[in-house]
Length: 240
Image 1 (cartoon, helix red, strand yellow):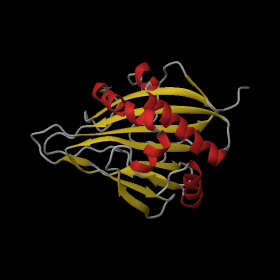
Image 2: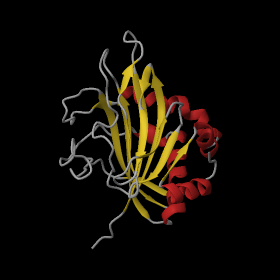
Image 3: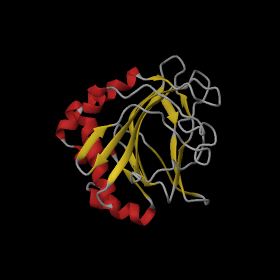
Image 4: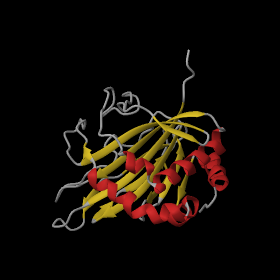
């Protein structure tokens, strides 16, 4: 268990990833972020439908934003599609996927700003300060009664970036959803459940693959969902 970016750095260098329990992440984010957390988490109630599910599913909602991060400087880029090659996402890759943008108020929320700052420090500890292309993804997975829904329908995968941060925002009336971490082609290195709000994992996308097992409703008569935030960092390509 870790409480400082330097501790996270040590474990990621050793293992390629680090599970960050909620109480440690809360210490990193600070009191202003914790005070703003309820309003931040409530923004997941207003996500648009993911219309690019090649499996035909309608169980995923999301918003997306692209940022330029350079040290302590964070600026929003013009809204743009999310793109992954089929090498990284054989199910939904190969097309430009346009999602509803992350709301300006969500981006400005002290919790989001603290998360971006903490992630920036983690990345800088690993790779040094440099310009980064950062993408934010707000996800809600909603299993229908009697059916499972997959947070990662592409299975164990890499995202095709440098660093990935995944944080649970909320779980409501769902079972399973086990996070799997595996090497390039070997067995699982670790399996755990992001169970509490702010449970998170930070990983080196070059060294490990990740995925989440399907979730299902515990009580089919009640709403069921799993909310998560994914933040990816890819080194900016120098301009010609």
